[in-house]
Amino acid sequence: MSAPLSVPPLLIYGCGKMGGAMLKGALAGGWPASRITVVEPHPAAELLTLQREAGFALNPAEPALAGLMLISIKPQMLDTAAEGLSRCLDAQSVVVSIMAGKSITDMERRLPQVTRFVRAMPNTPAAIGRGITGAYATEALSETDRAAVTRLLETTGRLEWVASEALIDAVTAVSGSGPAYVFHMVEALAKAGETLGLEPGMAARLARATIEGAGELLFQEAETSPAQLRQNVTSPGGTTAAALEVLMGENGLTPLMTRAVAAAEARARALAG
Ligand SMILES: NC(=O)c1ccc[n+]([C@@H]2O[C@H](COP(=O)([O-])OP(=O)(O)OC[C@H]3O[C@@H](n4cnc5c(N)ncnc54)[C@H](OP(=O)(O)O)[C@@H]3O)[C@@H](O)[C@H]2O)c1
Image (tube, rainbow, N blue to C red; front, side, top):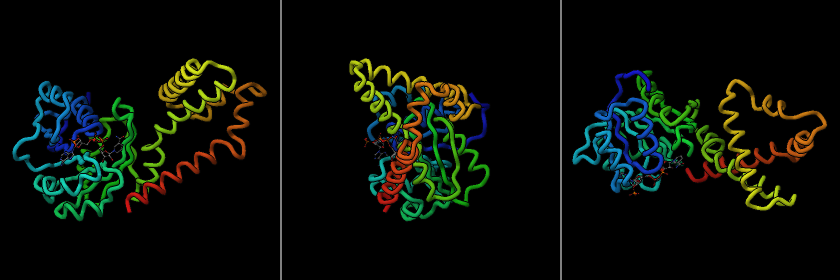
C-alpha cells in the first residue's frame, strides 16, 4: 500500500466492470474511502458489499463537487448523463474519461466549465490489477493534477502517457483490444495442435497453459526483452527454430499483426466520427 497522500475528492461516475476495477484499485492503493463518491444507478451486489465494508459514499442525493471525476459510463450514455455530470463539476475539476471513442472535444461540448481533461484507455486485465492504460492530458492540467491522475490510473496496473490525443486510437488498437488477440492466439495454437492429432480438449489445455506461462514469464523477467526470451528457448536447427522460420517469415506474424492493429485503429477513428 502506498503512503497516504493528499488526494482530491474522487467521484466515480458509472461503476460497472471498469469503474468497479478502478474503485477496488483506488481503495487497495490507499485512497481514503472518505474521499470517494460513487454514482451508479444500478449498483451490483459486489458494489453494495464493498460499500458496506469500505464506507465510501454511494449515490448521495447531492454529490459534492468532484476534484477528480472518473467517467466510466458507456459512451452512448454520455448525453443522458451530461446534466448529472455537470452538477458535480466546476472549473477546478479534473475529468478522466475512459469512454471509448469519446474525444476531448465531445466532452468539452457537454461540460463547458471543465478544461482539465484526461482521456484514458485501460484494458481488461485491469480487473486483476495487471492492466495497462494509455492516457492523454490537456495542457490545463497542473503537475499536481497529473500526479493524482497517475495515482488513480496506476491502481489497476501500469500507465503510459501519450503526447497527442490521436495516439489514443493507437493505444486502443495495441493494448485496449490486445487481450483479445492473445486469447485468439490460444485458439489458433489449439486448432493447430488438433491438426497434429491431439484430442481437442488436450490441445486447448496445452495452448492455454502455454500462453499463461509465457505471459507470467514475461511479467517476472521484466528486465529481459521478448526477443531475448525467444532466443533463450530457440536452439539453432531445432523445432522452435523451424516454427519461427514460418512465424517470422515474409508473410509471418509481424505483417499480419500490423494489418490487424491498423484495422483496429481505423475502426477506433471511424467510431469516434
Ligand atoms: N471493459 C473494458 O475492457 C473497457 C476497456 C476500455 C474502456 N472501457 C470503457 O469503460 C466504460 C465502461 O465500460 P464497462 O465495461 O465498465 O461498462 P459497464 O460494466 O456497463 O459499466 C458502465 C456503468 O455505468 C452505469 N451508468 C449508466 N448510465 C449512467 C448514468 N447516467 N449515471 C451513472 N452511471 C451510469 C451503468 O449502469 P447500468 O448498467 O445500470 O446502465 C454501468 O454500471 C465504457 O465507456 C468503455 O468504453 C472499457
